[in-house]
Image (cartoon, rainbow, N blue to C red; front, side, top):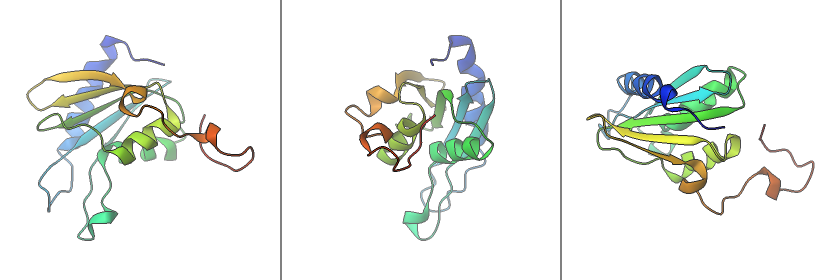
Length: 141
């Protein structure tokens, strides 16, 4: 499920708007993300920091978790916007892989630069639900 070019601008704009809502009193590095569901909905997220740093949650995971909480399980694309075009962390890559291993990922900066990649390219040789014994739970579509 790949996004077409016409889907990208609204998705990037939604991620940019989400970035403005980030709670980043420690790093001062706001990140916004927006995920495009298979049925055309856009769900956003921003990074949310905590004084206990491990409890911080990245924008990409906030967007995906919000979408799942709203009943979505299939995704076409995810856009992430930072000041300098930072790439998703390993934890976010693994969560993206859980739901959409071939999803398009747009990495953009606040100057309007962007690059397109896929979850598969960001996380080669990944581990997923199919690697677990049958009946052990796990995610997926």
